[in-house]
Amino acid sequence: MKLNSLRLFCRRTSFNSELCIGGLGAPCSKGVLCQNRMSPRNPEQKIIKRVIALEGDIIKTIGYKKKYVKVPHGHIWVEGDHHGHSFDSNAFGPVSLGLLHARATHILWPPQRWQKLQPMLPPERKPLQREQE
Amino acid sequence: MFRNVLGKTFRFLGYTVQYGCIAHCAFEYLGGIVVCSGPSMEPTIQNSDIVFSENLSRHFYCIRKGDIVIVKSPNDPKSNICKRVIGLEGDKVCTSNPSDFLKSHSYVPKGHVWLEGDNLRNSTDSRCYGPVPYGLIRGRICFKIWPLNDFGFLRASPNGHRFLDD
Image 1: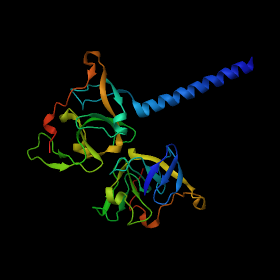
Image 2: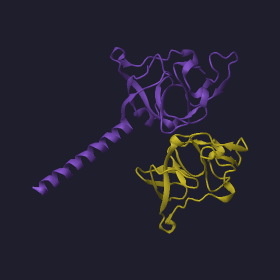
Image 3: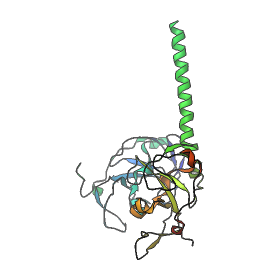
Image 4: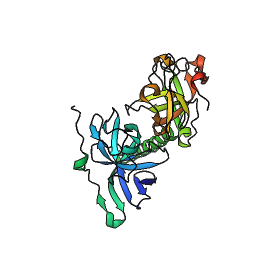
């Protein structure tokens, strides 16, 4: 999803004109929708995806050059909810945490789509092995 | 008397918030003073040198080959690293160390830069962790402030042979 950003906490997507509100500095956990400040391929573009795996997790990829990936230290694995039609980590690999900008918490516009975005990890996308702390 | 003190306190808080916001915007969008530590950029920048960095270049996408930049570490988002840009997206870079017999080359992917320290023998840079996304660049170092005997603009790279012209 492409994003045109207004400043502060409002984000509008050109995909379906939804206005989301997000918070800065929230700790990143699996399943939350996070917004990357700069897309890894195009620094002028912001993208919004779901966090699937954190550093140390091993996950099975969909269409990436390697079938299984261990997410390196300081990186996260993000995927769009619409698999196959999403430009996400399956295309450009794990994303450095420094590129993370904010967490999307609510959809504000259009009013019929007014909702709180739930952090939810799809069951088929769970990591194979979690790194023990 | 009490209202006087309360009024002064609120005014003071108001000024603090105002100047705090201006200072934050200045550090975020204009530039700031940075203390560098580590041996990876010798002889250009020594340990404990104080430099001035500006952030306008990164917002206007004016980072050029040969610039010294401050970058958020790809492996640790809380720390910053200071390296020289050797290649921009699409450039051909030498990925092997100078001491290697067989040289290997690759092209910098779209949206990334290739960073190397000036002290090639003692620097963990893109030769270790690969090309770095442009979005991690925080600012460009333009001026050295301390030590005073080295005051002024920064020198060009002592490793001119690492810049491969297409």
